[in-house]
Image 1: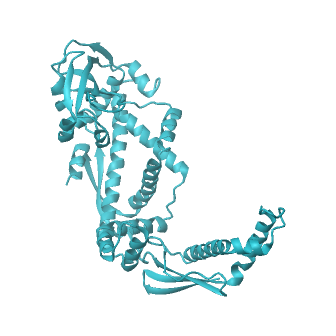
Image 2: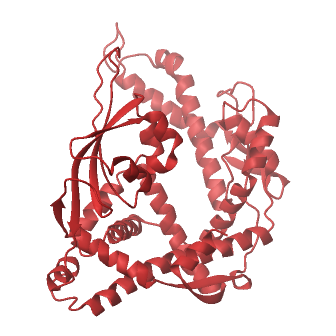
Length: 444
């Protein structure tokens, strides 16, 4: 068995895997003998089927399977031993029908791989914002805590401080065929949801407000106020909808006292409003700073991408697109797709190079820990700060049952580790800023 390499250029090559008949002959023969021992053929007792009959029926399939297995292993071993970071997957070179009885079998593969280049992170600089929560944001977070433990006061009609609960149902047309079972959507709106609140504020409990799918589709703000995302809008099957007012109430915020402090943070951990505000500020600052650090990392990576030349195996990638995607039917089409994806491929190569150079690895414990962080952050936005760790982990495990979530969180973990590297190595232009100012900076 032998693998030879013929370079086309610095980032692509032809790998030729050559097998001698002796590499697979004995293994094929062994499998044929096992087949003969265990085959059940009418007219023969088990184990007495002539080897010649088994060979005639099964030898070709067994030989091709063994040859493909050895070629695949040889190719993978060569790639790993020579530290080739492949771009795309190997593309087999078209060949005539393989003759397993030949003394030698050769199969060629076109491959593309990443170029060899260096990135000196210490030579890059970007703004690194020290983000601080404003009093407004601190007070809003505390108010969310108070709302969480608030008492409801039922009202006959809505005021500017009211919450209006709605049950939104699809109206099935009289001539609609088949069964239609569409559970109602339950939402609560307040004056903060201006569009939706404007439609219902003059109504009483039991009143029905008419809506249409077209209305929601064309009015993005109204759809958002009523908590419809794009996926849910696509699954509204009828044009007319009815929003029934099921409840109108006002919240009596929980007082800022020891009882509330204990409910949110555990008994005795917070003992005054001043301590509460300090704790909330610390939590918000930490949360905002995570985003500021990510912003810094992204800016550094943007600079690296702009200043680093990365040679792509373009000719190979065209072949790979044609081979791997049946919807791409011409070389011209493949070239157009490649041109649109070049920057993405380049950035992936740069990130991969940094992961390799700085030994960034991800395991399940890392992914679970990040999922727990995400759960805690989401709960904190609703004023929930003291959920038991076993409950947080339960939510995190549920989150990781979704393949897409695992992929996204794994990428976040990898980028988090790379973030630490970049924060340590790249140069920072430190600036203090409020969260509102930081959000404005992100819009630039």
